[in-house]
Image 1: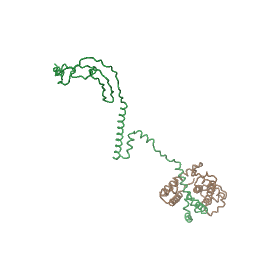
Image 2: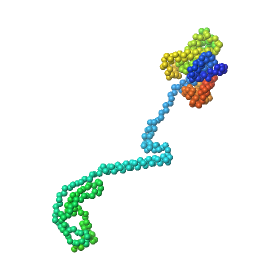
Image 3: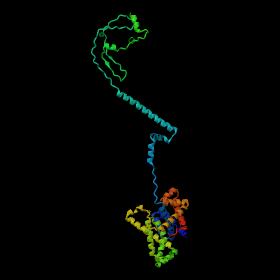
Image 4: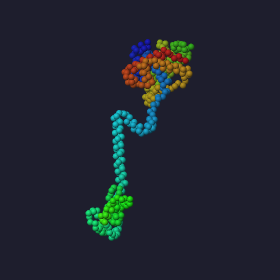
Length: 232
Length: 192
């Protein structure tokens, strides 16, 4: 009976809107004016309000005091795991998004490029270090006193066997003394400029010849024996 | 003794000077009148004030009740008038004190400290009844009630969420509340 009377007045669909404060100012005033005059709508409104309040009370008693669960994303734990795994795992994780051959090839190319650049850097660095450590050429000027010339007969044997066998006395003064500069075989060697070297010293420095090597046990033909035979 | 009497008989006894008779009327109807006031005002503290003033007004006007309408309708009309009076008062107060427009205190529940053990048992039974009644609703009606009462969503938000017209959402909520009312009346809670 109540519902039929309520349907006749046409305000039944306004009950929910009014109850949840979803009406405009004009509609709300019209509904309130109608509610005072219409007993059927008042009873209907009271019945719907009781249902709503029951649900509200239930929600309040059983759910309102419950706290909303706090969802915490464990960033710290993720960070700790990443630190524990190590740098290689982190590096491989970069390429973990796609394990396709293209990604693997790209990773290999990157590693090759880094290695090539690093190798070049190490090479240029070594050269720079070597050049920095290079000793500048030092010219040693030795004050060498003019050698004492001793008239001493020196026999010069001409290498040509067809040459004459006469021995010419040679004095040290007759030889032209030329300053000799030691060859610089490598940048690290010192360049020594030799102004003059006495003949005796040069003789002492001369390279050993075959005849100097005395070998008593050797019975083979010797060059000195041949020369002696030619001279004799 | 008074429990077995009808509302009209209780009114007659109250008009005759029996204070317990009007107390029985209050005990029977206080929850429904409170729910009506809550439906109109939307706040429990305001609803409590309106409910109390409505019963005071009813007691003062007992002699004017002629029995042409049901007691419940008479009380409903008194409660509606009290709610409208409170609304007008709040509007005037809000114009004087703009700070009162802050709605942060809306729907703040203040637990009744005077609940007797019998009332607590009654309330627990009612909660169980409501839980079963809401659970027995069709899913399309239940989801609207949950979104509105539990999630505190607006009609527009519910409409967008369910992809339904706004009028359909309101109609479903109205239907849900009416079905809930019928389910609750079918198994009334025995008042201690």
